[in-house]
Image (cartoon, rainbow, N blue to C red):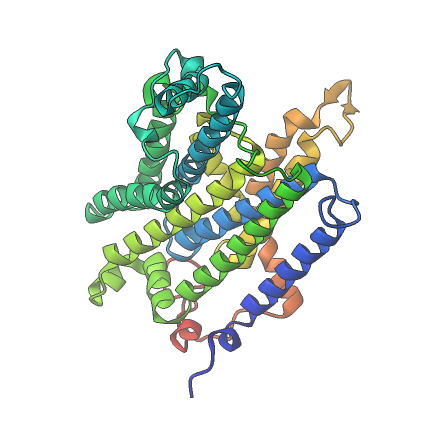
Amino acid sequence: MRTSYFVRNPSVVIFLAVLLLFTLGVTALSDGAGNGAISTSFIKTLGKTLCLCLIAVAMDLIWGYTGILSLGHFAFFGLGGYMVGMWLMYERTRDIVITSLANAPIPPTEQEVVDAIGTQIFGVVGSSEFPLVWAFADSLVLQLALVVLVPGLLALVFGWLAFRSRVTGVYLSILTQAMTLALALYLFQNDSGLRGNNGLSGLQNLPGVSAPQSVVSLWFFWASALALGLGYMLASWVVSGKFGSVIRGIRDDEARVRFLGYPVEAFKLFVFVLTAVLAGIAGALYYPQAGIINPAEVAPIASIYLAVWVAIGGRGRLYGAVIGAAFVSLISTWFTGGQVPSVNLLGYRVDWVEWWQVILGLSFVLVTLFAPKGIGGLVDLVTGRLAPNRHGADYGPDQGALMEEEGRK
């Protein structure tokens, strides 16, 4: 008799229960629906952290389970933010324009309203006309569809070209980084249609909603928690069963999986596109809470940070990716928010805002050398989840390729 998915994956139930309790606890302490113990700004920080956890799950799926070190997933994250940001900025500007023209002697025509919106949005780059990429900016439904379609289509085209050429290893990582750099440089241009270096701003204001920011931030926090829960379940379902065994086999020994007759490129392309879509959804929820998005957000360094988070949390463990992203995000907020006092060390003033990235890089090196399982390895020790007593050598080049264990699933 076949057991249910949740019985076979108790870690998913535990994760969802912890996420639910965390969401309820934060709600009870929030300023918008609770006793106000947690400020609105920190609610936004927690909501953004949940979005970063979602993209970390996507990164772990493509890197930790499939063995593809992508240094370009923040490009998909940023594209998701741009897609929803276009609608938010268009509608917010529309409300401002209509309000300002309400007392005009002659009611404005629809074209005059559109021209005024274009002047407001693109005047900063010396233009007043809507580029083609803004064709659906007035439709929330279409822009939400583009949140999925644009990152997914870019990943499909890039992945198909790269995987069919059998580019692997560090060369593929460099290609993904080059893709991200090319996108960032394009977005920096004023004629890109997305306001160049200025980016999109004022995204924290929901058009037509009069609720205070304390309530709006809580809505986005709930949406981020829901997206993380659903994304985690989807990723866990993908890595379980035969499909999960195949992608882990690709990670450990791609040539042997291809020799067994599996369409390796199709498996890799599916995971690449799926994780790009997850990253786009995470970005669409993140930037309305951040309030602004600009091309610097999709720079290659952001994708490198993402790999560091997953490595610190423990790649090859979905919960490890979540732990790593949450830990680094909250610690980073603490260090860079000016809450940690500077230290005078041997006559040199250590400013943690500047030294935080050095600490993060050093942590990545130390984890790689001395704790390759990351923080997730500590969870394994606490829960007693140890490697099975297997016979023979490791199946693949990565130490700990649990062929015997995984073959039973």
